[in-house]
Amino acid sequence: DLYYILYLIYCKNAYYLIFFKGMKSPMLAPSLLSADFGNLEKAIKQIEENNGSVVHIDVMDGQFVPEITYGQPIVRSIRKLTKLPFDVHLMVDNPEQQIESFAKAGADWIDFHLEATNHAHRLIQMIHDFGKKAGVAICPGTPISALSELLESADIILVMTVNPGWGGQKIIPSCVKKVVDLKNIRQKKGYKFLIGVDGGVNSETLAYVKDAGADVIVSGSAFFNNTLNWS
Image (cartoon, rainbow, N blue to C red; front, side):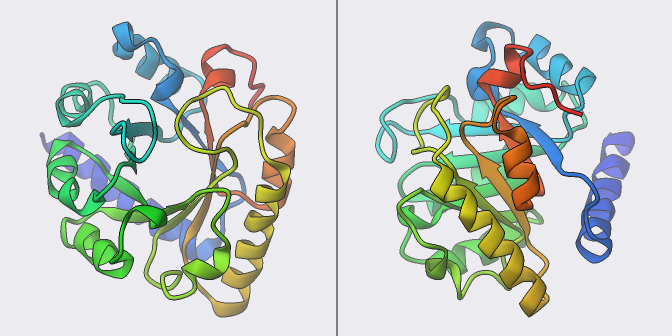
């Protein structure tokens, strides 16, 4: 409806405002992976009422990662429940086959794994062609040097600080250094991408990733267990 369209325009403008003026505080992106799948409406309400800025939606195919979660029909059905932007994290093989359907289902940001495609730059262009923000995620074993040709065109770099596939894991400290390095590259080159952190964020590690310079912080288990202590 009109209000939803205006909201998305506002979000888009605010997004670029963040790029050019700098982000004073990071955005919290609670992951539905750790929510009660039987009551996603309640989970989204919890996100809205507890400082959530983005709804992080982990899509798993049982191939790129062992588990299977949910697909386009679920995203489509919960889209009407909130005006918060949806960050759809595709933990799937051949992500180029899923972009159009998730864009039409209601995704605002679409993240794919660098390790899952041979044509990452083309995939960023495809996401942009659908009017969405393009994110590139990297697993713990992937160095940031592999992103060198993508940083200028990507909107979000999502640093996995655990091995992807399931929630509740402990953060891998060495991965947080990637956030610091990406922040330095962004400043030096004048790039505009946001830096996201996904995995192992709880009350003990939250300050650690904030201090490293993360712009978007994904939290699942700690958020939905009410132990994150976001402030």
